[in-house]
Structure formats: C-alpha cells, structure tokens
Length: 76
Image (cartoon, rainbow, N blue to C red; front, side, top):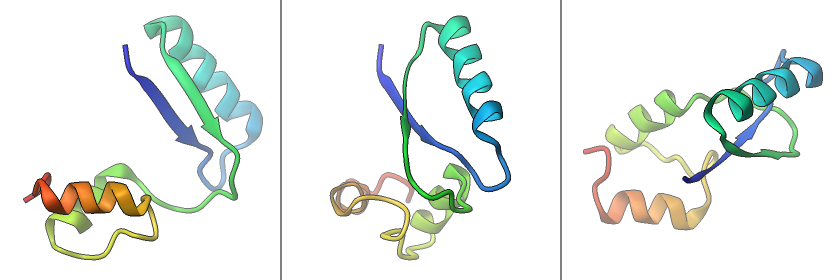
C-alpha cells in the first residue's frame, strides 16, 4: 500500500474535498494525506504532458521529482 498525497483544487470546497477523500479511504483503504496549501489549477495529466514535451514542471513538483523524471525519462 502506498500513500497518496493530494490538495484541494480551485472551486472545490473543504467539505467536498473531505467527503471525496473519506469515500476513497473507505472504498480502497487508502492512506491519503491532504496538503494544506493555496489551491491552484493543475492536473496530473497536464503535468505529465508538459514533462513529455520537455516543458518545465518546476512550478508543480519538487526539484527532486523533476530531476528524477528527467533522469529516468519517465514520460518520454
């Protein structure tokens, strides 16, 4: 079992976010941690596309994550 880290997207209330996370915790026995940060618009599929196109993703991921993706050509 691997932990999942998520954050609230713009336009999603705390209640909606909490309800969905609780649903996944119960349905999949998921270990979910919520990042407490200002919501910003980003989707993992968009970040993968950016990485595949060689675009910078440093705005969305930690430096070590970007380095790992580049080093191992994860989305190429």
